[in-house]
Length: 95
Image (cartoon, rainbow, N blue to C red; front, side):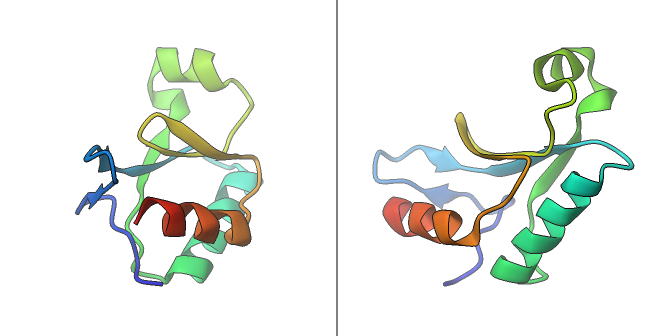
């Protein structure tokens, strides 16, 4: 599987742009684990936008303690734990 870049969007079948964002916070063990698992699965060069939910009051309210969250556009892919098989199935489906 080729790495998908958050910087270079991937086109979906419906022509929407895809962008992966990891909503996270500092000193979050689960956040660090999800990012490490994602990079291990997709490669160390996998660029994903990392957003600290504590830097924005609206995001802090929206996610509270429920991070990490990996999203692709408006689609929430994972909350708390990363599943490489589900991510592979998802990326295969949108190619």
